[in-house]
Image (cartoon, rainbow, N blue to C red; front, side, top):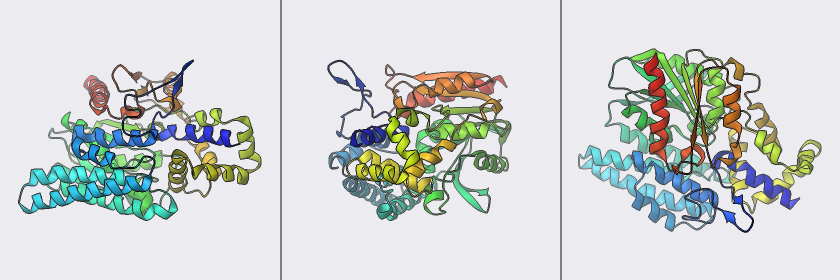
Length: 430
């Protein structure tokens, strides 16, 4: 049973933490990514390190600040991770405040942006019930720093998108061009709207797009303050976002694009099946069924246990969570964001997240993104591509480009260059 659970947990984490598995040869274990073992033995710590540092390209980090923080963190110790990133974020935030007091808006803005990303990183592993107050705290601090940063940028403003009986938080980045195309950016399992600015917003703005980035149910503030969990029928989230976007100035209503990142690859595709105002959709990566690879990897005995005795299944998972950081983070975050109480319920709710009955309804232009070492979704982007009955393109990022990781993390330059070049070419045809 212990071996089966360890296999399950190692597989689960690949859904959202990006390629921590290893390719086995006859005599050795081959590294999948250029950053493997770079800072830590723990693979998720390495991936989240690259995630934090990678935004240096768009102003979300500085290498010296980041690397010195990482060197102070104890391997696999989430409390150490939290404390060290929080200390760096506080120090940089204080620097920003001093610069602001001196009237140096540019320096203050740059420091506030970095502090925002560092606060996000600090709270990443704080998803267990006993730590959720820390997750909420760092989320608020990240948003506060980001708000201070954009206060001196007139083309970025915070927005509230009407949604059912509440609103969704986001930011509108206005193009300098009149009647410019609109790119709506959708994050996934554990991202935030502020992170999307560094990940996609900066690059899209530089290419004269209007950009709307936002958080929906299960994400960021909407989960932590409004207590709204994920929903599989994401069209009910994106359609209100488009309705709102069309009230904004200088939007080309005939050139609306949607990009979904990580789990957002499923969410965006689902939305595109129901709203024909979306003229182009990018899924990075392509996900046909969120649970498919997971269930294929589970040993038959464990699948049977999940069906026949969920209590014993939960007992086994909880035992492994005590010693397996990746399992601990994944299930804690999933139980919170899907609003379920047990690992067994996580396994069941994920089965709703499939394009099985809706993919034939997608009629807009599609870019399906694959990453060579994104092993959990292996085969799914191509499967999505093959089933699409519309104009479509399959884009694979490779090891040769050092862009093989999940969502091309650590390779934001080439990722945005290729993806946004495709989008520019699509809208140039119209």
